[in-house]
Each structure stands twice: as C-alpha cells, then as structure tokens.
Image 1 (cartoon, helix red, strand yellow):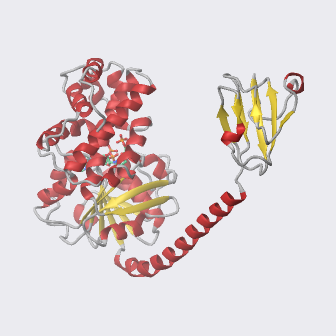
Image 2: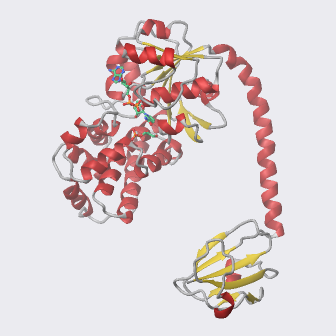
Image 3: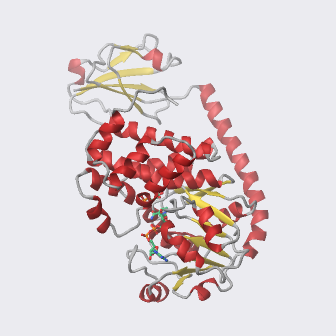
Length: 455
Ligand SMILES: NC(=O)C1=CN([C@@H]2O[C@H](COP(=O)(O)OP(=O)(O)OC[C@H]3O[C@@H](n4cnc5c(N)ncnc54)[C@H](O)[C@@H]3O)[C@@H](O)[C@H]2O)C=CC1
Ligand SMILES: O=C(CO)COP(=O)(O)O
C-alpha cells in the first residue's frame, strides 16, 4: 500500500519523496501556504499517483490544510509523490538565468562564425590512423559533421580497406552501420597522408611507437596529430604526447582528445561530450571545429598531462571495478573502490602537474563513471571475468579488442614510484594481472591496510 500526497499549483513537475515519519510538508515547501495538498491511498501502487478505489475508505481524499501541511499517514513503507512548484521569485530567477544563457550563446555563436571562416579553408582532408572501433567512430563523426572533407582511414588489411571504400562498411567493427561516403580507406600510408591536413591517431598505445616510427618521413612535421589512445607505454611509462615525440624524434603539433565516449554510442549519434587538450594555442579550437556538432560537445583545455593521465589510469580503475562486480561485493564496495581510485588518480595526476579541474572533468571523473559502471567497457569486462574466477591467460587470449588498462597497470605503478605516490587499488590490479594475488585476496589485503585520514 502507498500513500500519495500531491501538491498542486503548477502541475508540471513531479518529485518523489520517501518519508519515514509523519511529515511536516512546510519543511519541504516552506512557501507552500497557498497550495492544495491532497493525500490518498493507492493500494495497487499506481505510479502516476491517481486516486484509486479504496482511497476514500482509508484516508479519504484528505485535503490537508496548506497552513498545517502535516501528513500523519506517511509511514515507513509509504511513498509520497509531490507535484513540485516554483514560487514567483524562483520562476523569475529561472527565467533570468535562462535568458542570460541564451544571450551568451548568441554572442558566442556570432564570434565562432567569424573564426570558422578561416578554419574552413584550412582542412580538406583528414587521415585516421587505425581502423578499429574508435578509429571508425572518429572517422564517422568527422565525415558526418563535415561532408565536404575527405576522410581517409589507414588500416592494415587490404580487404577491410576495400570494403570501407567500395561498400562503405567496416566488416570487422560496426557492420550494422553504413559509413558516410566521404570515408575511404587504404593500407598505403603515403596515399593516406598525401595532401592531408590533419591526423587522428587511434592505434593502441602499445603499438604506437612502432607504427609512428615508420611514418616519420611521410608525416610532415607541421601536421597536427590528435591522439585518442588512452594508456601508458610499457617499459617507458610514457603518455602518448611523449611517445609521439620520442618515436618521431621531433616535436609534432599534438593534442589529446578524451572523455566518456563509447565508440558504438558515437556511431549511434548519441549525445556525447569530450575534451581536447593541447599546448598549441590553435589546435584545440581547430579540433573543436572539426568534430563538435549538436550531438558532440567538445571542451578545450591546455592541460595535456591531466587529460592524458586521467584517460590512461581510468582504464586500470575500470578493471578494478569489474573485479568488484565479478566478485559480487555489492554497491557499497563499488562506490568505495571507485572513490579510492579517483583519489589515487588525483594524487599522481597532481604530482605530475595536472589540474584538479581536469581530473574532476570529462576526461577524469566523467570517463571513470562511464568505464567503471557500464558493461560496454572492455576494461571493466576484463575485470568482471577475473573477478568471476577466470584465469588471466584465458581472459587475455579470448579478448579480441584492446583493453588498454591491462598493459597500463604495470606502467602506472612504476610511474607512481617515480613520483613517490602510493596507489593501493591500482597496484592491486597490477598484482592480480601478474598472478601475484587473486582478486579475492587482493580485496582483503587492501581492506586490511591501516585506517587513514581522508586525503
Ligand atoms: N573503443 C572505444 O570506445 C574507445 C577507444 N579509445 C581508445 O582508442 C584506442 C584504439 O582503441 P579501439 O579502436 O577501440 O581498439 P580496437 O581493438 O577496436 O582496434 C585497434 C585497431 O588498431 C589496429 N592496430 C593494432 N596494432 C596495430 C599496429 N601495430 N599498427 C597499426 N594498427 C594496429 C588494429 O588493426 C585495430 O584496427 C585505444 O587506446 C582505446 O583506449 C578511446 C575512447 C573510446
Ligand atoms: O575509453 C572508453 C570510453 O571512454 C572505452 O573504454 P574501454 O576501452 O574500457 O571499452
């Protein structure tokens, strides 16, 4: 049985409250003097709160005086639905705030259009390195957004290149989607880079050094390269911004693009928000122009370290979250683990010079929430399988797509040692992957660490 209370004034908002004690509605709605409040029983738990038969019998269509506002019948197992309202003052504030936002938006769009005129002239062809799920998604996003631009994917397989170019289908990833006709693909790097103005790099981190080294002479030193790969290189612990410089043996205009963004949802055109970071003054804005659309917001930033380190480390944390899920340790454990992981990423990130705003933004907490809590994540899936008892070797040998967190786990512990940062959760993931501990033992070990102040 449920008790519903409706407060009617402007019937366009509804808020549900669970009230465990007799409630004074004046505490909830101090300005509700003039509201009509109705309480009634819903014995079939009607979700829309309509009075149902029997209501009158038990509690009646009780019109509770707006002045007293007390509902005595809201006991522990009962739900109270409240049709919410704004006071006149609140409504004026909301309208003023919204008008201000619209004014700012009009002025900004005006400025953008002027800048855009110059950018349109500068990009005619974009090359995408990598024909996996994210390379395909990035190529699609750009090609849809700028139909006048030629998008060329550099892939390794001739047949795949032919099917992308001729059939407009990636036969390996996202077969169900027709690719825009301004996307072509080739296995020939010289062809892919000829007359290109912009590169998106979507090759997994561990293969990027070998991949980029061989392109050194074909890639003009002035060509902007935007990396979407998230991870640290094994052995060097380098982030992609460093791998690019060391493998090309020269600086290259560089940006990293990161944030909560499953490739499949970008293919579907679901609303998504990313952040692009570069030390270069114009590159973030250029990237924004290329990919931002009504489906895709792109924030700009100059905090390359923050965006890269957050994107790399969240993959390791997602494996830990999957392990907690696989072990069925419950929601409390999951929330505790992810908060602890956020702290560990912040401790290291800040020592490396990352801004706290970046770490709590799209590439940090945003991507952590997506990857740790959603089953589409490959890193999380690796963790779930480990937590469910599968052996590391079996998980790795049957995972076809890249889960960057696996390789990054060891690299991050070395990096943390270099910066004198202790990372219990991320270190535990490395130990599990290396066979030094089982998922269950690792959880116990972390739980038994000394109690500490919150930092
Ligand atoms: N899939 C996603 O939703 C997202 C992926 N990313 C990042 O994008 C990067 C790429 O990931 P995915 O495309 O998802 O991986 P994937 O596993 O779907 O595809 C990897 C691609 O890289 C290619 N590749 C592998 N080794 C290569 C080599 N030595 N030379 C040239 N190409 C090589 C493969 O042929 C394949 O086309 C990763 O760093 C990932 O973390 C970032 C955001 C979202
Ligand atoms: O980075 C991602 C989403 O932002 C993709 O995560 P996974 O690589 O774990 O699937």
